[in-house]
Image 1: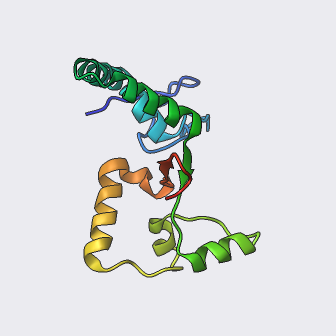
Image 2: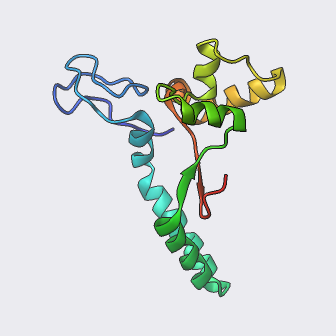
Length: 146
C-alpha cells in the first residue's frame, strides 16, 4: 500500500488521503493523485532503469531514448469526443468538460450499458478511489490524434 503524508505541514492536522486541502487550516496540500505518485517516484525510477538496461542489452536503447525524447518534446494530451459533442463544446463558451462519473451524477447523460458502466466505475475506483470523480483522463499522443 502506498504511504502518503499523513499530516498537514502547516498545522499538523491529520490529512485525508482523498482531499487536496487540510480540513483544519484549509491549506492546499496538493492533488491526491500527485501526492500518491510522488511516493512511488523511487520505485518508478528503478523500473525505468531496469527497462533501460534491458533495452541496452537487446540493442534497442537508441529507439527507447528517441521515443522518450519525442514524448517529452512533442506529445500532447488528447480526449476523444463524439463529433456532435465536440461541436457543442467548441461553440458554447459556457460549456465545461466533465468526466463520465460527473456527467452521470449530474444527470446530463445516462449511464453506459451495465457491463461498460461497471467496468468504467470499477477502473476509476481501482485507480483513484474517492477522488476519481475529480480526474479528467486524457491520452498522450505524438501526432495529436486520439
